[in-house]
Image 1 (cartoon, helix red, strand yellow):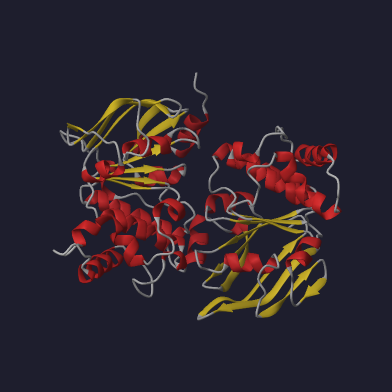
Image 2: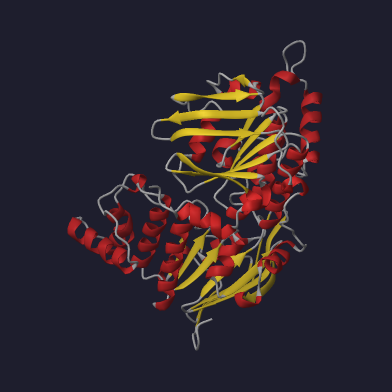
Length: 504
């Protein structure tokens, strides 16, 4: 913590319960002025509830919150804002149809209760805050047209217009690349120099260890401990979060080069204008291929093309050596392909439907009786089989998908596609927004699939995920394939250097 600094925020013995669930149980947390803290815990540990209590959005059942020496038994959102607390949630809460300048200055203009809008004043407010973070942005550009990384910066600037003294960032690096993460961290460091505190919430432990001075760990709604970051490493932090030792070791057959005579999947010179160009690679039985590249590189567009959701302009796809005509997802499924999308909530799940219904949705035809009605016994049997196979933790198959943790939701999406008995499984960001224990479990599932002879493609910007789980990796930049390597022959530093290198 900063030398001789005062405490800005104290949360003392806060508890919160919902119907049948103890979300927080006497949790305490403190943040000093100008300090960079991290809050970590697995999905369902109580992090979100604690943030909402600090923001005054949720009222605790008991406990005390002290901000700038003022005690609040009941903290309301307006109190939290007036005391200088700003929360930047994962969705950023920006107005996409408004300009950067309007988004940054909106809160201040509302607070001033102006009857007549001064565009000059709006631009002055925005320009001042943008300059304070050493960034150049076109203030007239609509927010919907800018990158996620720049949206993060707009959200930070908006918080600063409210005289923020503590900025809470909830999973701020989920969808941005390393270069953009480095810039965000430089902004956080500059905020610290100005006496502004940051509470950084993340599942990415390497980032937690890099940016924080102090880490607060909660598990199952209880405080595990508060630790100086210098005393932690990845394994220690993983253990504190999960309560068990988690290994990231690569699987046994990674050392072997698997090249049977005929590939399961072969992609030849695949191109789509504005997306990707001349992509060629093979995937063999029992092999895991990694595809990596920064956001906007064309990696997801390529996956969508393989699954019939983004028709390529030219090139060919072969499955089991035969030319595949994939116009729609149904064609891909019939040929043995499955696709797990990065956005599991909006694209992978019927979030309000039950676990059972989500799992069997891809195989409904096989569950029909001779009267073309769904056989509920077969439906239950199939869903139960997959929940047990993938260790989905839930009270029953009738539980809605939205009530589950991120890790369990991801296992349901995997189960849904495994039910189709695929030969080739494409997973786009399989562990995005998932805690360390669930991430390890998902990796274990993927490795087992490859062990059974499935061909697997992992698309990810997490370098360790690629290096620890893949036999080979492909680097895509600006829609072009720039490198293909054996993962045993490349280091993390070398891969970072390749990713940062400009295309000539």
